[in-house]
Each structure stands twice: as structure tokens, then as C-alpha cells.
Image (cartoon, rainbow, N blue to C red; front, side, top):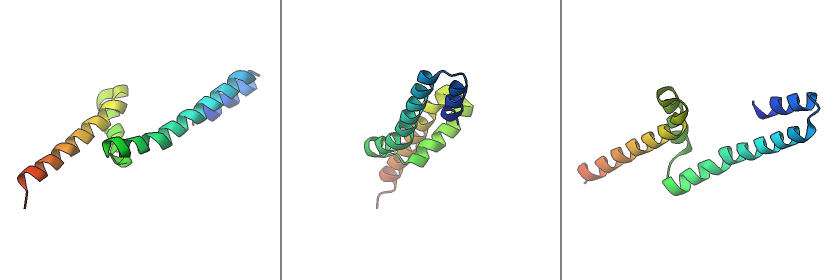
Length: 92
């Protein structure tokens, strides 16, 4: 939604080097955000990608821009606390 119109605008302005740089940078960032981040979340934090997405949607209205980072963190800590509570008090 951002990278393609920006690249088209730069091409219309005949600023070809910046158009190529913007398109390459946008493709790189999109791949990092859409492919690598969920893999890291699952591998390192055992965090499902939907939990991360819900955390962003919850965090942005509450914390603003910082909600992108704080929302998933708070949601994952809350889920961890529920898991620990269940394991500690509901042992069979």
C-alpha cells in the first residue's frame, strides 16, 4: 500500500534512482516483517503469529505507536501468567 504508490510517484517525478531504492527497501522490509518475524516469534518466544497480531491491534489504540511493541509483549506475558497459574494450581 505504501511502497508501490511511492515508487510510482518517484517515477513520475523522473527520480529513477530513488524509485529503485524505495522499491527495493520496501520489498526487503515487507519480507522481513511478513516472513522472518513470525519465524523468530515462534522459535524464540513460542509465540503464535496471531497473538502477535492481536497484541498490535490491542496495543495501538491504547499506547499509540509504541503499542506496536508493547501490545504483543503485554499479551504474551499475560498468556504466560495464565499458563503458569494453570500449571501451578491445577495439577493432577
